[in-house]
Length: 558
Ligand SMILES: [Mn+2]
Image 1 (spheres, rainbow, N blue to C red):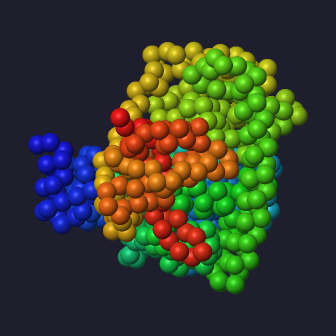
Image 2 (spheres, rainbow, N blue to C red):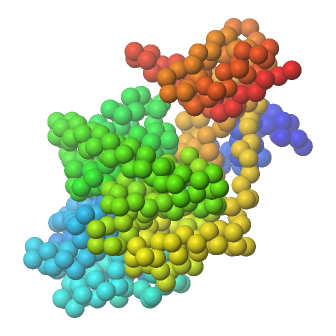
Image 3 (spheres, rainbow, N blue to C red):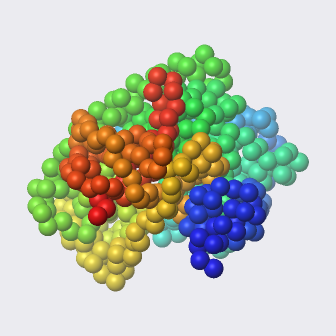
């Protein structure tokens, strides 16, 4: 059967709009049962937590702490996955009567991960039990030190082991460790923490705390982990509840940034909410963001969210400054002959924003990019981002002899090295990208568009799109294609954008914006009709919602 016929069959038997059926078919849901399963929720996506290696021991470790009447120091990370992990564990364990204290590293103090200084400080504060989360799997030396001081240590992580053996702790939960056969290695840190809590609650005959899934959604989206069925289920549930979150800080933040429950989308969280919560940790210390996740009264939430906005403004200013310098450095290093991977460096670039700048470079130049900040002590710290098909973890593994530390995933990674080694690294990464291992780079498929008539674009379609969230990863937001479109109005906007009014058929017209496409103005004035590729989103102006098209491409028809 052709796709169109399959879509018709699905639309008819499940009573859903034809355009929605076409979207589902294009995403690989090509039978009525498959679509029905997708729309009916969990459907086996949630896996048994006890199939994670070490889970039984993790539950026992925790119950032993309770039997001894002691508290737990949760040690997290400064990014949103780490902060979500700490707040999830604190809330879930507090509920069971545990006393929880927490500590966070800072990029500018003892640096990433667990440090001897942090362990000493916790011992000073009376720690007997340390639970690291979203970090720890490569902290072999630090954990050996903690054990030598008589501490009980459990590690919950989702990063890859260092390759130099695992830390010797009491319990280790990480779907990446050898011998773990858990069906979802792509859990983020707060995802593994949630599985641990489910196992603990099950043991104590408590229901799974599903209201914590909004914290899992935050970490899953912020860490850009692949949307496996379980990750998608967690994110879908979390997004569905976040507008009415029981946590005042999360609720206040989402409402102030997203403005309407229908704007709670994966993209909204990734581009509006997550950057705010990551901002203080990027500029100084992450504590003001954790305070938002942990606060318990609306009044407190209002103040804390306001303060977060100020941190975010600082972050934006710093980011713009470093971006300009990084783009200038790309031109200086490579001229017009760009290699398949970009490595740009600068003196003392703010290390809190180099990851976002790397992400900007991948977009601007359509290549994987690493941004390297050379510190006054001669050590260079870097953050790298990929485009689909390139694997930073593999690339860095090939060059691991050059690093003092490194880690990360296929699409986001970090590393440090002596500044003398930067040129050598640049040479070897390019060599890797050109080798047979790196050729995945060329296997990207163009985005398939979904044919649509303007008459099909309405609030019903938007409600369906919301129901299919998170629209990212292997199920991205649809790009539509409409033909025989008339350009009723076209204006050049500030910043090189194009503002359009597009019409089709009788009476169907939409406002549209084409970012960075002012140069394409002539297409809109010379062709009688045009074909347009676009995404649809809500636009709010003066409290009124309207649908707006975001133009991805526009061509004239003869
Ligand atoms: Mn993480």
